[in-house]
Amino acid sequence: MKYAVFLGCTIPARARNYEMSAMRVAERLGIEFTHINDFACCGFPVRSTKQAFADALAARNLGIAESQGLDICVLCSACSAVLAEVNHAMKTDPARNSVINHHLEAIGRSYHGTVSVRHLTRILFEDIGIETIRKHLKFDLTALFVAPHYGCHYLKPSDAHGAFDDPEHPSSIGELIRATGASAVDLDRKHCCGGAVLAVNNDITYRLAAQKLESATHHGSDCMCVICPFCSVIYDDNQKPIEQHLSREFDLPVLYLTQLIGLAMGFDPKELGLNMNKVKAARILEKIESRSHHES
Amino acid sequence: MTDTIQHHESDSFLEEVRNEPGGESVFRCVECGICTSGCPVFSVQSGYNPRKIIRMIHLGMRKSVLESAFLWWCASCLTCQERCPQGVRISDIVVALRNIAARNDLIPDPYRIQEKRIAEQGRIYEIDEFDNRKRSKVGLPEILCSNEEVRRLFEVTSGESP
Image 1 (cartoon, rainbow over the protein chains, first blue to last red):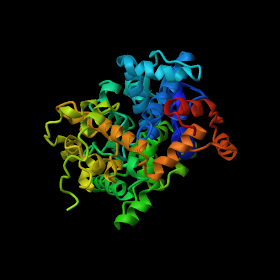
Image 2 (image 1 turned 120 degrees about the horizontal axis):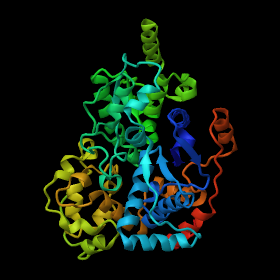
Image 3 (image 1 turned 60 degrees about the horizontal axis):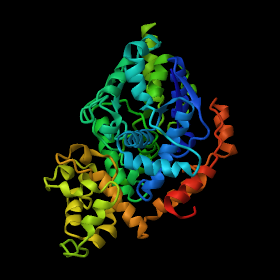
Image 4 (image 1 turned 180 degrees about the vertical axis):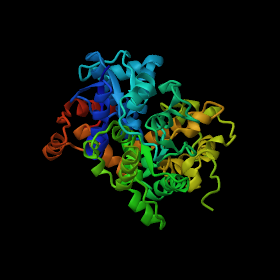
């Protein structure tokens, strides 16, 4: 199982913990990643101001993967939505296809619509499967209550992603959490982290993010589980500012799904970059360890 | 009374939005309000109201929409678009409106800065030698940023230089 891994901008700069845990978990499961240095921005951040530039950036990345005969595995949900959306348009909208390919001609590239674009979480869920993942686990995380955060762009736009999970009532992340033995606190699945508004109106972002943090702590979660670097930037990196802004206290660890699965696989927390998480996850480790000592 | 309707700032605004990529479905709105009822941003900031934005387009309130702060408060979560029973692609319409605003030089600074960085570097955050050393310490591959193609794409798609 070989993929061109698409990191985007945020992960290599601000989420090495995600990247490290994703690489280790993927390797353990037999997923082979090819790193392509020519990949640049997915296009998402410039869609609002220069749509044609965003389309061309996305298609350029798709064309590079196509020229190497590789499908794309994406780690960031926003990147996955934009790449999937432009990919879908290249196959279904001849007018947009011809404009985009005309622009790509200027840099000697093209894209013919043969690449598939999927989020790593989706590949774990659809291709690897819960049973195979279970076979690779050393520790049972039964002690943990984990609140999955689906975010927005992992599932939407649903016409571009295809119907691999229900965008209104998703279950894939919950099932992957349960594969580790942990319980998924699955009550409030439809939340937006508000990340896209942070730079222009942080009050909106903080109030939105607080809804999820509030709900997760209210239902007794030990941690939240995310699959997108920007959701983590909001819930983890910005948790202190959110607490200050709204005079609240959450103190809720936020782990990437791959960190959670990696812990269950028996990787050292440092190999999964857990020391880079802003809200310290020590309590979670204690809970896992006390449980495994209890069992042995 | 800044919130009252100012009629006919532009007779052709609806057509302008319809002709902008992403704006094609704007005429299908029946004002049911499902978009606003499920909007997470509206739940914390009622100044952002997607149903109202669509109505303002129909009423020709060009200036009020394009110069508003709320145009940039959409979180692009796509909830409205997924739920609209009329197939109005509301998130795409917001993108279309922002693109029109951008061509009229009405861009919030953070977007301007982001666009400049991507056009110049190919990505939002530059990965320098220091970052690559940190990456190699934890077993991650070096990232080399080449940006010539991205600069060129910026030029051919926008007619501007980065």
